[in-house]
Length: 221
Ligand SMILES: Nc1nc2c(c(=O)[nH]1)N[C@H]1C(S)=C(S)[C@@H](COP(=O)(O)O)O[C@H]1N2
Ligand SMILES: [Mo]
Image 1: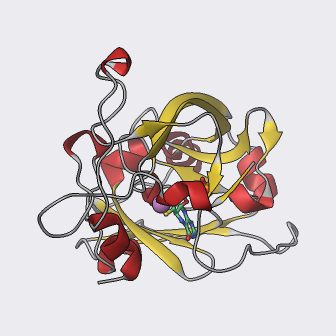
Image 2 (image 1 turned 180 degrees about the horizontal axis):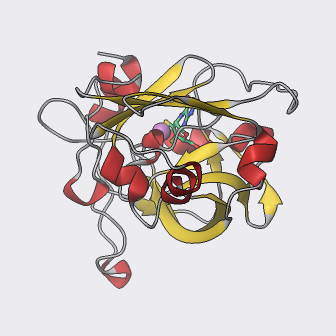
C-alpha cells in the first residue's frame, strides 16, 4: 500500500461537530483555506499547444483546444469539496464547461458507463460517466472568478460532485470512455474505487482511522 494510505489509516478521526449537521461528511474537518495537494511537480503549458482529448468508446474521438472550450457554453458551480486527508471546504465557486454541454454541442455520445480521466503528470482517476454528468460536476477553468492558478490545475481541472477530491483531477488532458472500470493512480495505491465521502469510502479495503492533521503540513493559499 502507498504510504499515504498507510499514514492516513493510522490516524484518528476528528470529533463530529453537530452544528455542521449533515453537510459535513463523517470524519472531516472544515477549513477556510484551500490546501494544495498533488504528487510531483506543477506542469507548465503553452495554451497554444495544450489540448483535451476525448477518446475510447465515444465514436469519433475529439481533440479540443483551449479556445474550443471557451467557445462552449459556460456554467457556474458552487459546491463543497472533501479531501480524503480530512479537510473539507464549503461553497467553493467554479466556472467552466459541463461535459453534457460539450457532448451535446459536438454531437457525440459515449457508449460506455466508465471514464478514465488522464491528467499530468501521468495521473489517472477512474470515474463513472454519471459522476461527470452530474449537474454539480464541471470541467473547470476558473476558481472564484479567476483563471485557475497553476497549482490548482490551470488550465483545466475536473470538479467531480459527491466524491473525495482526489477524483477531481488537476491538469486534465483526456477523458477515456471505457467498458470496464480500471483503478486510477490513488485507487491502485490503497484508496477506494468510488470515494463517496458521506459513506467514508476512503480506502480500498476495510477499517478507517485517518490523520486529522496531515493536511496541515501542506502548502496553502
Ligand atoms: N493531476 C493531478 N490531479 C490531482 C492530484 C494529483 O496529484 N495530480 N491530486 C489530487 C488530490 S489527492 C487532491 S486532494 C486534489 C487537491 O486539489 P487542490 O490542490 O486544488 O486542493 O487534487 C487532486 N487532483
Ligand atoms: Mo487528496
